[in-house]
Length: 255
Image 1: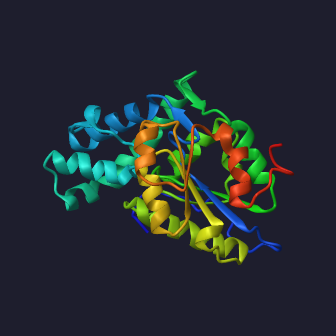
Image 2: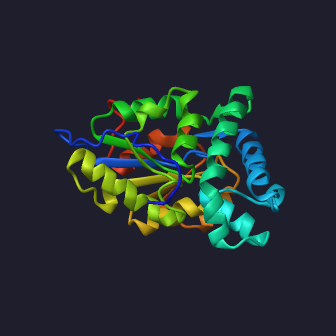
């Protein structure tokens, strides 16, 4: 467990009649955009704890975990890993306080991507599906971003940047939590990772999962295609056309 603030959110109690598909979503660029709120909060936390934000303004955060971003920025600014480790917990406490404040001030810039408001509740209600998260956000940051839209309770398992700095380790953590919750060990072909970056495709491959890329984030459709996903969607509005391929007919969901 990575030493960052995290809370035991999910009720890890085995359930009868377990689902037969595990669908794991990325958040930023896939489900929503939080506008400039995360970067503003991140920048202030970096300056407060390290005296610099590094090259934050010119750094692409897409596909990276929150801790990875800190280590990359501050490492490039000359800080040793042990020095970063000493300060990172306080930095994230500062960041999360600022993120909550910044998100409250956002209006139209904090929004769901097309299709998400309909798809997530439908999948959460489908007994064939266990819905979860694989995201570079630390857990509380993920919760803050999703709570505004009432979507946080839809996700029953997850793995976060507060679990591991390396994104490729996160699907395995989510799979183990899914096993503990349901009593079922999900195979690769029964697990779907949905994200908007080549890093999401890569982490799906690390777990032997089906990779679904959605072109609603910063990377272009061409960049996503080059990363070799199993399926490539323009947005999550196209999910119904994919469902049968995943072995999930759209009755009872999203007809």
